[in-house]
Image (cartoon, rainbow, N blue to C red):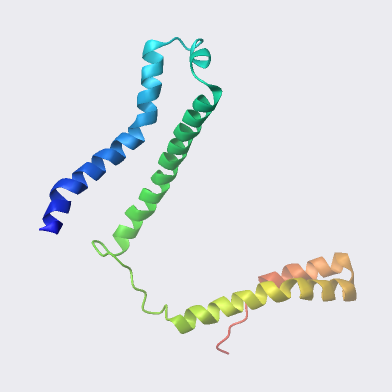
Length: 143
């Protein structure tokens, strides 16, 4: 009974309230443009209220722009495994993830120390060249 009440009454009311919450700043802008000229709006409304209205509209526009990217990512992910809620990678075990994370941490932890030792030994000019080669080296761990 409670589930039916929530689904038939509370959910539509919640969705309607959220839609009005999103549309309300635009309704205010429409009201102001319909009833006042652009020159008189700053004199009729406080600066704080106008700035908060502008910030809210700006944040909504930023959210809309970011949502385009999110929907594009979701579109491509849906093509990986259509209709699935989760994508499960067989090779992504916790041991592999931990090993790769530790290797990455070791690389970024030791890189400044290695750079300093090489530059102290060979100087800045030769040390930079050696470090460029060092960054390109990828050691195969299975050998």
